Length: 387
Image (cartoon, rainbow, N blue to C red; front, side):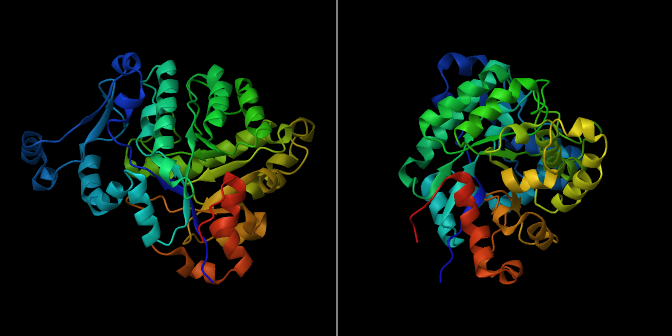
């Protein structure tokens, strides 16, 4: 029997004209977004200064309001990225439109997918962008991704991007996303504009998402102009990448459970994506057995259950099929809480057919269905009738 597969963490390659075409002229002129291209003179200058390896053509770089969209992304990182990204250029080209996405999905035996931004996350969530412009950037991206998916709505599920730059607009952004037909939204996990996700100003946002059955995906990343975990002490990619995804996911869950957000919103649906799942057993063990057991008169004000029970009730987590601790996660929170994602078309995305993975072969057929499709159907409120 053929397995349905939903890719819960798939990405698009945004077209450079997105911002000019989907923003008002006045907003674009206030904070222009442009691609800066490499050229022969720049390549020669690099070669003269750093040697022949640096002469490799560099991919175009996004600039926002005259500044690079990426932080801690120096020339050495750009050169090494050029060598690596060259191997995924065909995939990134396919991700530029729905037709290409469907072609790539068919080759990977993926039935349907929830789509997340690539470059837009560095443009929308950017401390160099004025708060009101950030909100307009998010709205522009959302209009674009709806158009991107409109002719393949049975297989492509657009996820709305929420800007956290101005907390007074959060409920308005949720209401707009719902009116546009989005089934879920995604936010960054960091402290943004001086506010963490458990700030009092976010209460209405969490309530609105829960009341409208609007799932929220946390999707972090490295090299944003944000106070991402690790940026307070590191500048190199190795260290920043080691901290950004999984550490921010853990801090986001701690905020949700420790502040009482999950207790106050029992129907809220949360996913932690592109951070793997191996961090979960250790975190939940510590929260259940150490943190929640101290000063109970205080913790009982925000938690009526153990942190692990809130996770099992409210949360899902993305998995990488070669992770060492997936069976432990299944034992801890259940197979119904795992979401399969490829991270296509990024250079480190998983290309192999998930049905052939060793992990999947060790699961029951019901667990395989849950991991590959049913869990995503439940979380994203998305169902494809493609068989």
